[in-house]
Image (tube, rainbow, N blue to C red; front, side, top):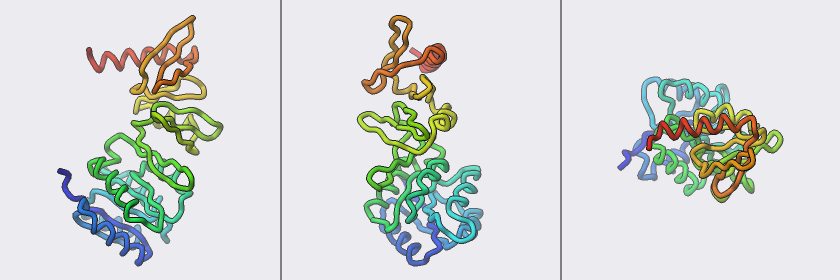
Amino acid sequence: MTPPLKVLVIDDERPALDELAWLLGRDPRIGEVLTSDSATEALRVLQDLEVDAVFLDIQMPGLTGLELAQVLSRFKVPPPVVFVTAHEEHAVDAFDLRAVDYVLKPVRAERLAEAVRRLVDAGGAATASGDEQIPVERGGVTRFVSRSSITHVEAQGDYARLHTRGDSHLVRVPLSTLEEQWAAAGFVRIHRSSLVSLAHIDEVRMQGGKCTVVVAGEELDVSRRHTRQLRELLTTRRERSGP
């Protein structure tokens, strides 16, 4: 059983800070709730204490929540961050900072409970788990998709469409950025307009000199220039995994 989490809540508005701390305190998965009304004070707290997660407002005077998250990301063991904000336009920035979740104000108890579940599932160390949570928006609602569930990615101009088994999501991130950031997680370019997760490749087909891969039941073209690299990567992956 996962031990209760110790969390730090940061918000410069006292009513919002008190309400969030109260809601978290009611959750049996939370053991201790610390509070701070500024990013500067929060840094002093974090110098003396270790916490399992930080719930962080974005719009604050002085050091903003996004700036504080950047500082926390440079800690030897960065605490997982959940943004709690009234501003949904910062979801892409949350993606860059590898936030565990992005909760919009006014905070609903059931939505906050989902954020706590994500923290517990990540073992209280989401940023060290290697499985990023990607913010996606649909119908004005922001939620997060685990990178490990993404089968392949298609370029759509300055956007990218993330495909999971049975669903897809459009994000405002260029394919070239994802190629660079996700290479270590097993995503590889197979075409000028697509990346694929090696872990989700079900078949590799060669016919008439043309290479395709089957991912989640969908057949994707592999360009000639990327065919050799893909086959070498798959061979290396198979050798490492053993018979």
